[in-house]
Image (cartoon, rainbow, N blue to C red):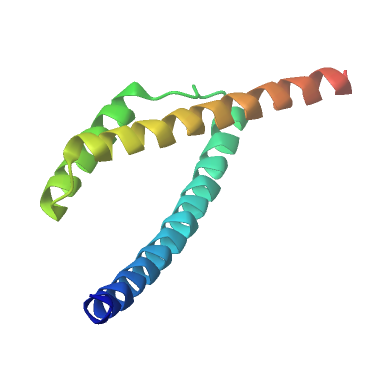
Length: 108
């Protein structure tokens, strides 16, 4: 039985290495996305624009669901991931707003 397991073990290792590479790309993409959302957050704070844009979120969720479906990915999973990301972005933007307000008060 050991001889039969060796090709499977090698294949398992190869596939896991591919998964690890995909995970690295996912993390790099998330870092890029959050770099961009921090820039948006700064613009929103500097221009007194609301942290949350429900219309944009609705459009993005529909778009992500369409992209997921076209890619053969579960649409609910894609939406859950996007909502998690959006939730963190909102927290980051609100933190920026608080820090900006604190900085303004410190300067007075």
